[in-house]
Length: 606
Image (cartoon, rainbow, N blue to C red):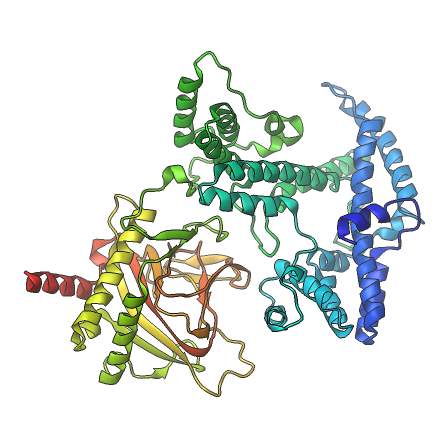
């Protein structure tokens, strides 16, 4: 039985056992290694938790219909002292019927509520199911927990073990608490990026509808008793102060719901412009399928959020011309409804929004290169992955260069990695490469790095020159016999142009950071090793937001600032090689050796 069905069943008349009691009993059974009882109690706790939330949502909705507040100016006192009491009575009666023996029995401590919000019961459940040899259920529980806790290293290892087990089905890796709007949104964006606009429209419309529905459900849960986390005694406020304080908390909670629906499980921060981004994408997709009326409607809705957006204002002019000046273009009613009016906020003058929609992209300077992941798919800003930048033959040439340089002893001294003692680090600069007697391979190094520069420049900063800041052909080799139980990283989490301060949630642009670096890139040469993938995190350095698996010809590029903290997973077997590239807009900080080599090659070729 899934959680939705369980919630429906749990809120039907009958006794609903408080979820914190079931949870406590389940953990005790877990610690006693009574796996069957632990699994039963933990599942019942999850069902009870879902049932409690469903009961509260249902009663808020029903009582809003039965005991509506009268509107109109000057009637606030009557609305509070009369209908508010009637609404409170309605809620108490409704919850009393649904939550037997009494609603007060279901008030849990902050610690327990936090465990359920973080999906902690699934962590226990996956072990219990594994011990009971119920692999499919163990995998589902593990995956559900890991989706919301991607930084949990032990669960990461467990997930990898499950993937290697012969009896595990691929469809068992399902999120039991998946939010429908996120699944629809990601599917819609995939179709959008593949230029499949009819499918994109259908999925994005579903996502928008589900997101607004989730928003209303979240807001319904903001009403009711406020569970204060501060247990110290306080002076009791007067009637009006208490009412004001309560409704201020309700309004704060409702505003927080906007962030809650825009935050993907496992992430700390919300996706920027989540609701407006739907309208932006739909505007473009409807235009592509020839439905200018709906495209104009989405554009008008988007402008409610950002009324000074020049690109969208130009689009509106175009739509009015195509539809006729007499045609009325109005925003969607669902966006302008009173209940959602708090979503429409004034835009700060210094706000800079980075949107990488198709209407703003410039064509790439080389044919055959594919954008396989953009910022939205990588849950961030100023991030992109390109494939087919190099051919297999070009990758082999560059790998031969690393071996030739190793044999010559220039640049490759098989020293310990500066980041971890469990790997050997090998680095080759452009100047060292030109000194190696492998002319074709050295030229390939220059060509590959320049090709990457042009691609990144055209994608991120068209019309604005990017100079090389530093170029480094780097290999990392796992040290045999030193990989057992390893928990470190190949390269710790950092930002490329500032000093990351996770505790202060800041990144300081000061020496010894390379503050002049503007963009970074990694061009991979191989994938015949284990580990070594690039990952991005939040500012906390532990919440993983995106991962990139290396393979020949794959180029990942991103802005070098605090918006893109990143690290490299441990290389636990084999040898990982890639060209690391950093770029700057500042000519004075351009890589002098690179310029010298290029000028020398040009004059020689002439």
